[in-house]
Length: 81
Image (cartoon, rainbow, N blue to C red; front, top):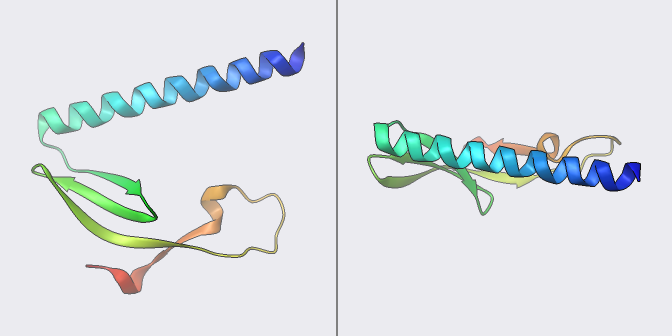
C-alpha cells in the first residue's frame, strides 16, 4: 500500500512540476523574457521568438554511486556559439 501511495505522490509531483514549467514558459513568452530549454543534449535560449543554440551537453561516465542524472552531465564549453 505504501508503494502505491508513493508512486501516486511521485506522479502528482511530476504533474505539478510540469504544469509550473508550462506556466513559466507561457508567461516568459508573453512578457518577452528570455528562457532556456534543454533539448536533444543541447541548451537553447528563446529570445524574441527565436531559438538560439547556446551550447551542447555531453554525458560523463561517473564511477561514484548515488549520483543523480543532473550531476552526470557537464557543459562542453568548446561548443559555445
